[in-house]
Image (tube, rainbow, N blue to C red; front, side, top):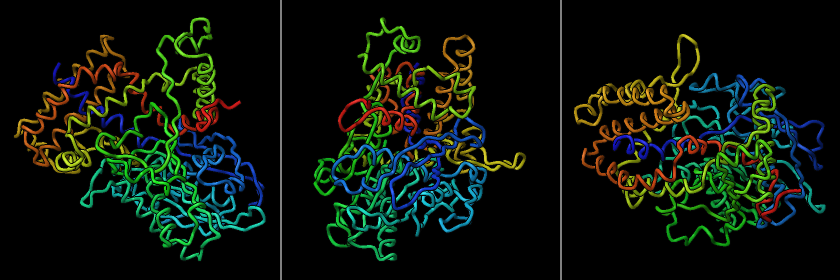
Length: 565
């Protein structure tokens, strides 16, 4: 029992944090638009429920150049809506995923007569820029293998002319890859490098450097407006890059007025170390808006208890938690028996769920019909789950220094496997595929001696591992646990042993590993109360999907806290 509890605790942080990299492939299309006028943008999304992204979903959003007439320090719902769609198009194209681990020499540009998304990872963003009247586009890191786990992030920069009150401006857009990252996502676990900054900040400095270079190359100055957005990891990078841009506007490095910088992030992790909050809420950052869902685990990572925060203002999409009974009553329209939440929230749940399933499954009628009328599974996740993360992180040490000294390198080594972000090439199928198991991954990446070392130190036993898996399979066969819970537990078990193996490889002592395990065990009763049932907890991944954020924002104004009529 003790080992099982420790297993769940050690890996719960890793498994739930895995939500950071989970996103969906999207693109934008627009027809017959005059780039000097306001227009509706038709977004084409590669449907995640369909094979190889061959079928697309469509929905519209309005792009209005007058969004940039309004003060950048006032939250603009319409600009927020288009911003999350804009950064979503910066993801890797579905077609190029067949070359997952290969470097691609082809990068698309607006001036290309034909944008071939099968051979360029930035094809969706290029198409977006082209159809929205942007040009002078540049791109970074889209040619790299998706197995690249360095502290960088792919992004694009482009500009177009807009007219506001008869005055012409250059609008510069920075779109940061916000899903389909590949292994660069693993940088999320780099919370403190030798300079004491996060992997997010290293990537943000790279983005900022390219923005400065872009403005200089194109001779853009005071008649320029800057628009930057990002989601999840991309959101954390956008948050910090926007802060750098603001400071550069103030000190004259960039000849742009800070009031002309518009920054929106969504579901962004905490990427800035500011324990005393002396910096993040300064007026200089009051044009940075961060939208998060109250029960999304990703925005609480890195942990606030260690001093990590976000620049600017945070707007919270309120958590709606449903018990299984209430979820069933809503799905069956048993309104007279719905007493857990207000009727207004019942209506909001229905609208969000309907929009979510249309976006995610609408192109595949069978899948959509199975989901139609259902309540979005993410609503079964209680926001108290988030407080369990503080307990888990604190078990590794009271400060980030303890984590960085002992555990950071361990997790950075194993996270690409846990999150299936590092893939191998299968010569038989001629495809990039996930590793079959933990042992195969560790031996290929780090050598057979790593496993042998853990065995010699008494930290790993293949027999014990196999026996634990067999126990989980027996519980599933006897219907003691669901298939979903069985899968979560098996992933958790792999994480548990992987952490121990890599901890041994990094020369952590058995005593130190045992100490952390015991710290977790001491907190286990409290943690388990927050994460049970495990099946519902596993739905925390869904709370982080872009479609969920878009569906919620379609129906709710986060600034006024009112349902959209």
